[in-house]
Length: 241
Image (tube, rainbow, N blue to C red; front, side):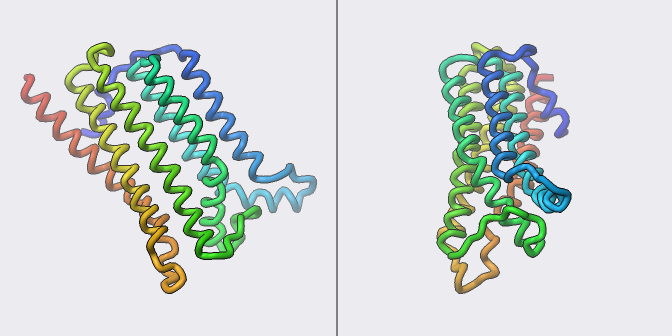
């Protein structure tokens, strides 16, 4: 049933527009900033081996940036919108991604450094106070909240333009599913921010990683939204047959 949900939306754009080309180039630049932030080029074998310890951090950041790029590409292909609203929201998305490249690297570097006892992060950024730890989680959460909110607005914009685009009833249903999914994701980021701001890290060190672990909720939340959409799609298909 999940596959049927994925197959509902038609591909309406087969050639990239100038807007999509700009967004693609901006995401590529974000990856470049990520590489630059890792540090200088190794000049010896020992430095090369040390630099390889940053590979997990780079891989995690790269995969997340690639996922965001793929999400925008799919949105562009399915809805073929190039009006003022689409341009503004796409530029806002690029702006947010470029801003949060460095916080993204810092938080993943801290995570891998903590999990490996410092071995898997050659250029880990040190955090000396509880305030700095809270700030790192809050900044990361604001980034997630903002980016997922922009995606929700992109899909809402597509839903509002359904007549001009020519969306079928099933396509509108899947579009509304995408709105709900991104709203839920933004809510999870908000939960992480709240945990980071209120948990007693100093008194209860075991709670330090709860703001980060909150993002594991993304997996069951996405599955639940998809199941709900699949049921609605099945009911719509049965009613129209």
